[in-house]
Image (cartoon, rainbow, N blue to C red; front, side, top):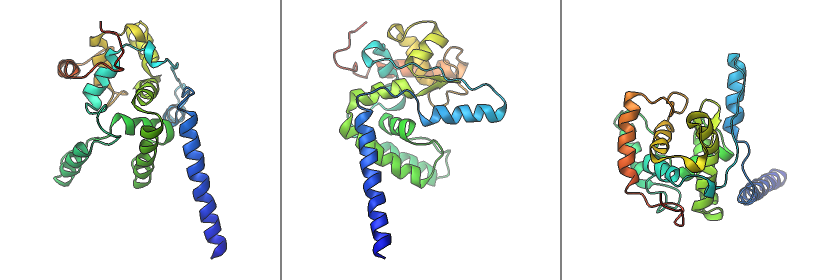
Length: 230
């Protein structure tokens, strides 16, 4: 029993030490690759397609302030207020699931960032637990600006397209600092299903959602606070 206890203790010490160290390191260095990028490459190979990753790290101050506003309006309007978890949305999602309604996501931008950078996408209780753990860590260690910076650089925005720089170049033939409100709103519309929704070629449904996000953006504060207005 002592041997088992010692092994368990060592495993826990290694887990907490390594994960906290990883979060601290990634507060200061760019995230060049994520588990999802590698998973998509494997999926492409299995399908017989050529793997493709279009991604380039861009600092937050070189990304149009319209994009943080758009993703907050679409994905997480309480991002600047919560501590990583939107309990109200989680409760709503649970109630809808109990009523047999279609399951929807209630993940905040912080949770999505933790999942994209450190974990896998398939749902399980283990992943949910680890996601909560990493969300707590990045909220405490990174802070909101770094979370948003990593999110906008790592999120999947199309087939083989990851982050603001890639989507700006490929879908809109521009640079991330020149993305307009309209373009950012279309990007935000695509985020729940970027493999099916093309921000460069929106469907009628996407155009309707685009109008809603533009209205919501007017209620979202400029982020970061020192970003220049258009």
